[in-house]
Length: 453
Image 1 (tube, one colour):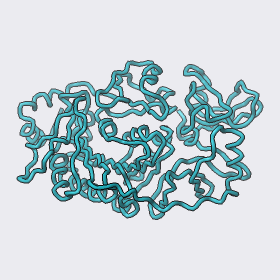
Image 2 (cartoon, helix red, strand yellow):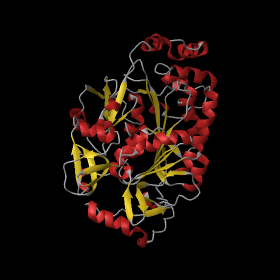
Image 3 (spheres, one colour):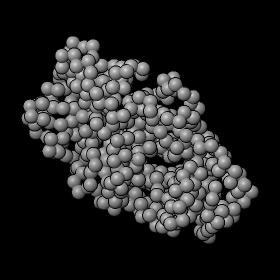
Image 4 (cartoon, one colour):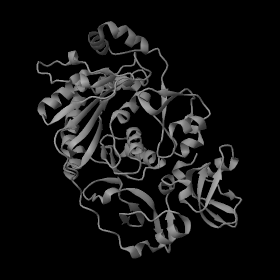
């Protein structure tokens, strides 16, 4: 591994006797992980379903190591049953104590690993605002939220400053998976080394300070910021948290379970005379001690009694505009209409908590239900992914080896064994993957064109 000389010297000074172990870890294989999407399946059922070996990840009870090279080729991936994620990156969502009905913000969310993990913990309750400042990266974030069947999420493409204007004191939990120098990615990605040489620690520290500055204002009293990075640099980790706590005395560090492979934060790596108590409550996953690339995590709790701030509710959509959608629900579904419905041109959304999103760049304002066409409602791909098989009156299920499953995922139309015309929820076994519309025994394929294999 061709590492920069300055980086080698820095790590020798930090790790001392552990430096040789660290360098040796570069010769280890890359550890690959996937995580069960608990909105759709529990981990034990997923392990039984997949036809390759899975080993539990110690710090994430929904995560597994795998050695199969192409799990994304499995049709169960198309059903959103699992998310592919670097093992140590699962630690943030695993350790953040999410409760149902929490209001959660993921500030630097793309491509969506931590957001989809948090969505599973929320279990369809509360609200998840998942944001990324990059419009390009938001495209991947959108797909991962929708394929995972998350129906209580809002996706924004905003700066921390603009988010803070809208959400002052609103969230119970905030994830700051901060942009960093990426030292934990060196073994996995040689491009990360080049980035380190151009986007050095000082540059990243300035970004981190700015993000934390606005994050603290969006957190309710009693709430928690989970600050994480994939770098080993103390300036971006222990020193950043120490600096934040010295400037914000209304925050405190809380501990988390480190028995799965974490070591305590390194107090001795802080180049300051004034060190806050309990800095060791931060945690590190180091690649020469665990199976993974490494991660840093700090949980910062805001002191005080929760204020439960709310955002102005949206105005309810005129019910007359939703007649065709009501008819669709009555004829095709076993569930009631969603609440907090809002129409944007012809697109219909259910807005989590009825939040007013005016003034923000919004990628998805909520659960995208479908389109109002002339005298009909056409359901969306996202809607299908957020349903369970029993939610639909009419379904067509393929098993994993059915050639028609492949034809469906390719977007083809074909004959099916059903006498019922109209909309059907298409499933792999019992897991929805999209819509189809049957006419005289022929399935008109409604699988989203951008998702086809």
